[in-house]
Length: 122
Image (tube, rainbow, N blue to C red; front, side):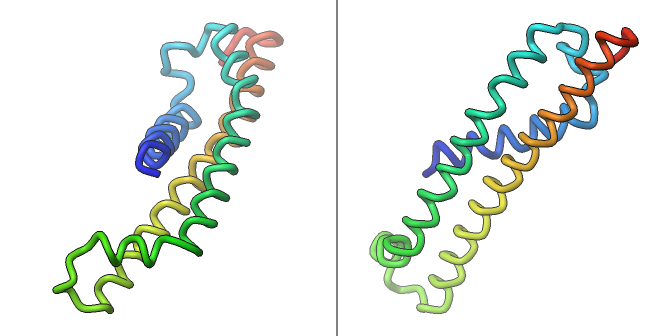
């Protein structure tokens, strides 16, 4: 889940930046790029939901046992449980944030395309 976590962090930060600063981005006046991002937002949202479901299934069944064997046994049980809870909360936060940013960017790009066609602005 490391690769999907890194991808979700990058998507989350990049999409949040584009939501608020689209006017200053490199593709603000390029219609094709905005339409491509609009069309890619649905499959990307499905992939994010799939990754979230897969991680939740993994964390419910295998995460505690798998991490307890990988970590050193000299740490107390309470510390290991808190690390497991942190990993689970961080992944869920990032995937959910990336999904919500994906939805918000979809509408922001749609509004930008509409403005570009009707008023000539971003």
